[in-house]
Length: 127
Image (cartoon, rainbow, N blue to C red):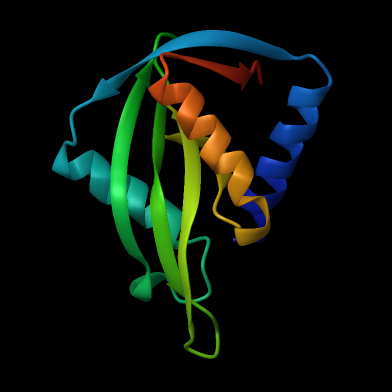
């Protein structure tokens, strides 16, 4: 869980240093196998992966071949308390997660990136 959070933080820092590129985006169909994979990757970021719940799940295809996953996830804390639905953002290239954000304290970042993707263009890190 912490490894991907560090990857996401590194991606944000790299994005601030000018190492980004702009790609076009379009909505992609929700294929069951891909949705299953993405939700599992997102759930692994939580304390209790089997209890993660999703809503407003969507996929966008990027012009560079990457995929972006957006929506909201409700996870349980270690004490079993629901944290409420929080916006998430995840980008993958091939089978590798390149950026992921599922944290409440940076929900505005996820909301912004997903809005950009829905709008037809997204700035991503070149890494």
